Image (cartoon, rainbow, N blue to C red):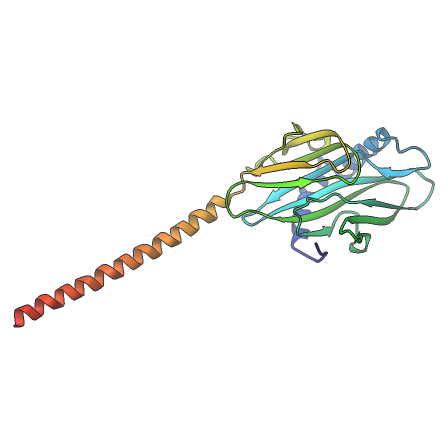
Length: 248
C-alpha cells in the first residue's frame, strides 16, 4: 500500500461539509463529544492519548468504496507534545490520504507495512481524519475488514441514510454515535474491541447493477446487430439464387 494523491479529497470535502460544518453538527460539537470520550477513556491531566470513540464513514460508487476514518487525540499537558500511534484502516485498502487535521508527512509506514501517525499536538482536542480507498467487486456484495492495532472501547461505521448502502456485521449492533444521530446517517456500533480482533463489515446496496445492466444491454445490442446482418446476407444470397434460376 503506497501513499499518493487521489480523488479522496473530493469525498472528504463532501463528508466534512455534510457532517462537520453544518448547523446541526459542527466541528466544535464533534470535538466536544470526542473530548468527553477522551475523558472517559482515562486520558488524565498531564497525559496525551486517543479518544475512545472511533468512527468510519463510508460512501461508494460503481467501482470503489471510499471511506474516512475519524478519531481524536486529546492533549492534557500544558504545551505541545509529540504523539505516535498506529492507524486502523481496512485491510483491503489500496490507497490512503491524510485529511482533516493531518498532513501527508504525519503519516508513515513501518517496516511491516503498518500505517502510523507521528505528530506534535497542541493542548486540547484535535479532530483527525484519514481517508481510504477499497476496490469494489464487479458484482455482488462487498466486505471490508478492520483489525485494530490497539483496544477500542467504541467503533462505529456509518453511511448516509439516503445512499441506499447498507452495512452489517456480526459483532455490531444498530446505531450511530450521538454526533451522527440527526437522521442523516445510519450505521452500527461495537464496543470493547480487543487488539487484533477482526471486524468484518458487509456492504450491500452499491449501485453496481446499473453497470451490469449497461453491459448486458450492450451485449444484447451487438448480438441483435449480428443477427440482423446475418439475416440480411442470407436474404441477399437467396434472392440472388432465385434470380439466376429465372434467367436460366
